[in-house]
Length: 438
Image (cartoon, rainbow, N blue to C red; front, top):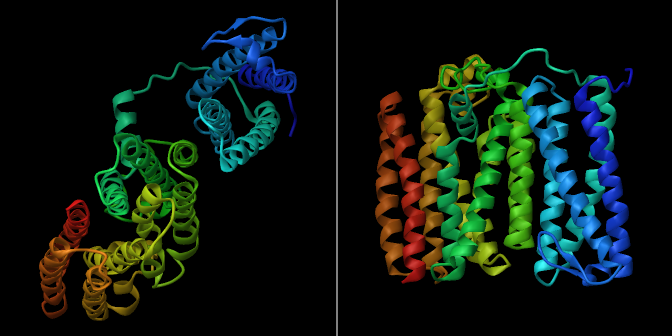
């Protein structure tokens, strides 16, 4: 690999490296000398002492570096969209750059906490590592585009939206908000709701994009997924990976900066669980993939609870258990309908490995356990009459659907179970919210 500065992209990256180096030096001088106190104002301050010009220089360098970073991101997404290393690395570098700036601004605006100090420091270290690697990689791999690329921005927006799996994100946000309301025992403030749901949406969307990046070849073999943006080639693999990494990183900065540390860590754990533990390790390795992997989708209500309270109580773990036990019958019903697809793709789903009859029995067993778990909240005096009545009614309907799957079988009944179980989860968590505020 030979390094050169022949491409305009690599020269821009090198210029950014120099700017960030100067920014770091001047920023350290501002901290050591206390120059921040002699230049008040935003975005441009007015020096009241010679030291104040250090603060002013720091602000100007931040602005210049930000402009260069935005130019580099734009250029990377237009000219390096086929580069599986360069585009993700550039994107992550950009998120780290602006993420560190965001945490720094939050620290200045309010009393800083230990986890924000650590996050700011770790972001700075990660930024320097990624930027240093980017300087080298861009000199080796970057090439100037010789053609003017005309994007259909409306179609690209639709594709990135599809990459986020919006329906799954919406369902996860329902459980997140339910945990937030249940933990607060009242309707939470608008600001807490906004940042918790925004962070949760970014985490879920980023995880979904990374999942589709990992499964892009597998998705080509399944009728249900063959038209996904990465499987169909409408977006490149590098774009999918970059988009997923960016949203996942941004979600952590949002949660850590505007919610609290526990909610941020739980959200991050959910991303790792779904992307690494389920998508990479479990999905094609074991027939228990859905059972074990269900923990990823069960974390959002705990995130909501942690956002409201800063800790996890018994009720939060029961909310986790509800989603955990709901996942197998929900997805096994879908697997019965799409059994040929999963078999063709080599995914060891329950109907493929153990047959439809065994799967129908397991759906009924897990549904019975699920309904039992939902009754733990009133049993431990953690929910009231509204929730109890809702849990019994909804649970009875879901048991009926599962019983029909067990006794009748066939794709039509399984599809009904799949659709109804989605509505069941939304309604049971709606009941949790209503009960909590009453």
